[in-house]
Image 1: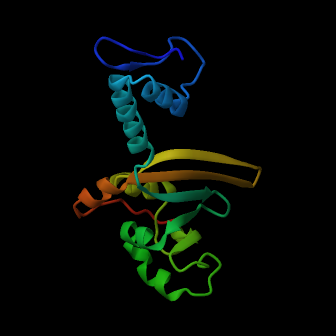
Image 2: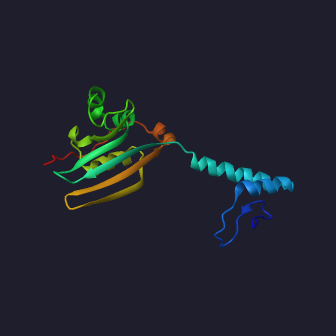
Image 3: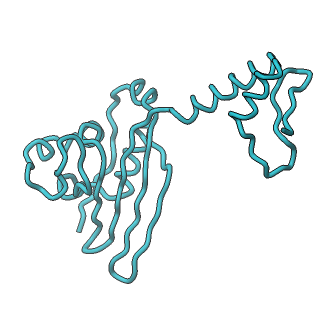
Amino acid sequence: MLVSLSLRQQLRGPERSAQRIDFPQLYEEARYYQLTPMVRELERWQAEREAQRAAPCECLVVRVTPDLGERIALSGEKVLIEEIFPETGDVMCNSVNAGWNQDPTHVIRFPLNGYCRLNSVQVLERLFQKGFSIKASCGGGVDSSQFSEYVLCRDLRHSQSITSTPIRIKQEPLD
């Protein structure tokens, strides 16, 4: 292995190499040769990577289609959508046989602007104000069937620390 433990006891990988570190093999070799400082550093490095990877988050998908005005659909957990868009609370509870309501805890392509008068910019702005950030997006289509989708996430730690301050978003009539 081309990994070394420097004098400052920090783990360094190979410089300018496309070779990835095979962690389990390196860890076993360090334990076999009783390289205690390297074993400790490898355990710390692995714990840091797992902490970054396992950060729990809340996610929503926003789908925007420009046909017949602008249609905005949300997919995600019902409770989360109701928290961010309280205007939808009654609809979520009372719509049992709707096409978007096939699961007791989640909705798929809930027609948001059918129940509150927000355009896509206002929807994204509200999500940003609630601590969400765009993690991925895509779009496509031809002629009259175009779409854009955004995957938005926020850390669970962040959502628990948000205070309830009134959000003022200018609402404009949709034609």
